[in-house]
Image 1 (tube, rainbow, N blue to C red):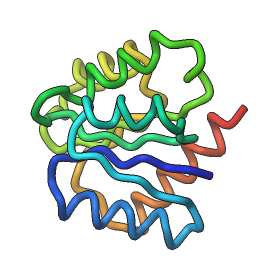
Image 2: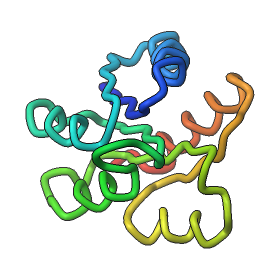
Image 3: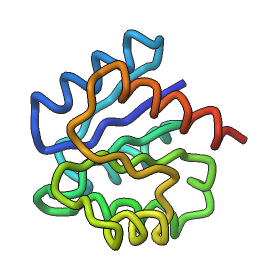
Image 4: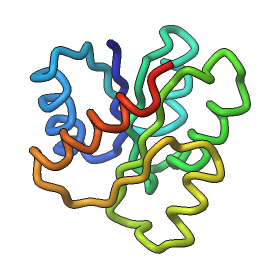
Length: 124
């Protein structure tokens, strides 16, 4: 399974990459949604975990862009953010196509469990 981690925070990308690699996933990283979208066009991942607040293209717009292309319907999108935590934000995330919406911070074991649950629930 291939994963793409999208976060402008390098430490966040490293932590998420480590968690995914420990679970046997192939991991790519991007510092913002614009670069992630270009990467997706070259090689479509099975799962994307994206922050929201990033330069050039935020996670909400990345999610919208992915969901407008039927070739990417199978991609599991998880929003993982520390900035947008309100119920309205969570509803917006789901409305634009995110499969899951997780707020930061989470302990690594809890985060791993939430991501594994999302993968199991949304696999085709």
